Structure formats: structure tokens, C-alpha cells
Image 1 (cartoon, rainbow, N blue to C red):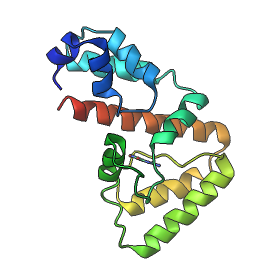
Image 2 (cartoon, protein in one colour):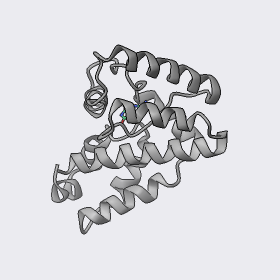
Image 3 (cartoon, rainbow, N blue to C red):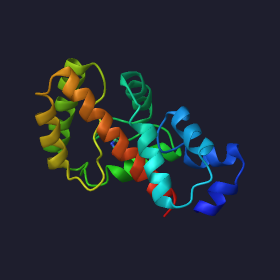
Image 4 (cartoon, rainbow, N blue to C red):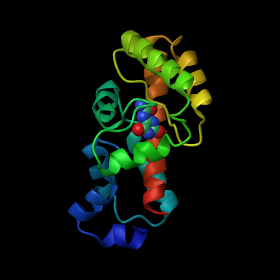
Length: 164
Ligand SMILES: NC(=O)NC1=NC(=O)NC1=O
């Protein structure tokens, strides 16, 4: 996808071209409605501005499309493929790491009532585990802020990849 095509496409085609970035159709619709964009930077800015409005309900809805860290995404869709690629540095053969992530994910879900979300791209399994353990100490409000920031990062990375 390039910017000219995105600007000129039908609303349906434009929305479909970015719906794998996050499972929040309103976000994609907001971007489609804001066309035409004069530059990619303008597109990134609008995408981030729309994402700043996300609240706990948006976070919980978006999590439906993000498998747990260390788990392979179910299904074969675009999101599943992206999730697997993003988690590429989490070595599934490292059983101690996998076990620690499983335990950490369970503790996180027990404490915060939702799946632990982190921008996994460019992070090693050990870095992810360290972040998981650090964030387990957050209070609910701080953790919601951090989880939303990670969702924004994942979404913007996927959007930028779409236009690469
Ligand atoms: N639970 C997660 O953090 N999942 C994910 N992080 C990513 O960067 N991609 C995912 O699917």
C-alpha cells in the first residue's frame, strides 16, 4: 500500500488495508475519514492522535486479536502472522523462558484481569520477561496506561509496515 493509493481508494478498500493494525474498527474508520493525507508523517500523526483516545474498553477489545506472549497465535489470518513475526525473538525452544513467561502471564492475568500486552518487536524473550515482572508491580491505573502505550506502539508499527 502506498499513500496515493490509500488516499484514492474506496473507503472500504482503505479500511480493509489497515484493519490488521488493531482490532478497533473505529480507529481505522477515523483514519479513512481523515483522508487525503499530504504525507506519511501526517498519517502517523493522525493515527497516534486517534489512538490517544483509547480507554480500557478499547484495550480489552483490542486484546482479542493479540495472543499471549510466548504462545503461537491461533488461526492463519494476517494478525496471527504478524503476531508470530513480532514475537520472533522469543525462542520457543528455550523451555525455561517459556515456563517463566507462562507463569508471568498467569500472574498478570490474575492481578489485572486481562492478557499482558507488550510491543514484542525488537525485544528479546528475556527483555519481555523483565518488563512483565516490572509491570506486575504496577497499580491498576499505571498498568492500564502502560498497556495502552504498548498497544499504540504495536498499532503504529503495523501501520508503518503496511506503507513500507
Ligand atoms: N500479548 C502480546 O503482547 N502480544 C503481542 N505483542 C506484539 O507485539 N504482538 C502481539 O501479538
